[in-house]
Length: 302
Image (cartoon, rainbow, N blue to C red):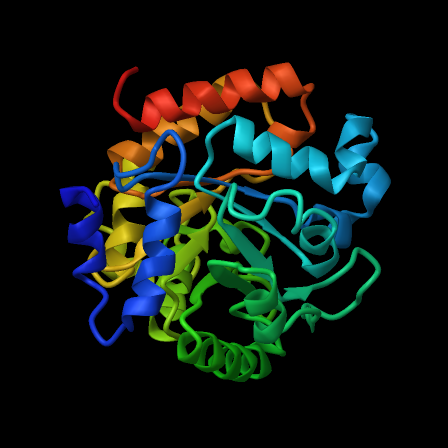
């Protein structure tokens, strides 16, 4: 165990040795192992957008083994996916990469801003997962039900030594489209995930927009001109950096934008990237080269 990882784990008071061991599995894995930085491959887009929209651009990606192998060969920190995808490669890739079972999901036809519970803690335990992952939508009419669901699931996970990752994506209610990525809203969403007991928090990179009229006076004197400064504030809202905070890769974008996001996350004190479409929708060689460069950026080598 490195001093960087020990320093992170020391911040998780009231956390069992078993959960800390699973957090350490993720933090010590791959090319960023021991640095305190993470790059995680999430592949839940088939549920969210459908297989063709997710994988047709790179047909190899229809195969769950492709994603497992990409995460292993790229030396990533973990692989996150829904139940069926993890089951499809669980035996072949057992012990080769820490896995995160995404236990709730939606689809592109749903009219409510909600997700169904599609996996269980017992599934995660059976598959040898290091963590469960769960999405909440602060702002949605269903948020209180989602909070109750993750409270029960995380309590069960912690009891058997499995860590909890919360995707906290503000959406719905009185939030405008710009408000979903607003700085004040993103910081609030990260803080909510921390309050719900997340060990790892996943949020989106924020803009400099301030959505809540009550928050305008609080933010008006701050300098939010760079993404790194905005990332720093989101990390501050995650219990002053006492919780691991990784940032979504978002929609498909150019390689230069992906690399700049990583520099901003690093410089703002974030723990890394959880990046899916921007890697697996590229040809394998290109994806591996991109992930190799992301590792170098998080190591401070460029």
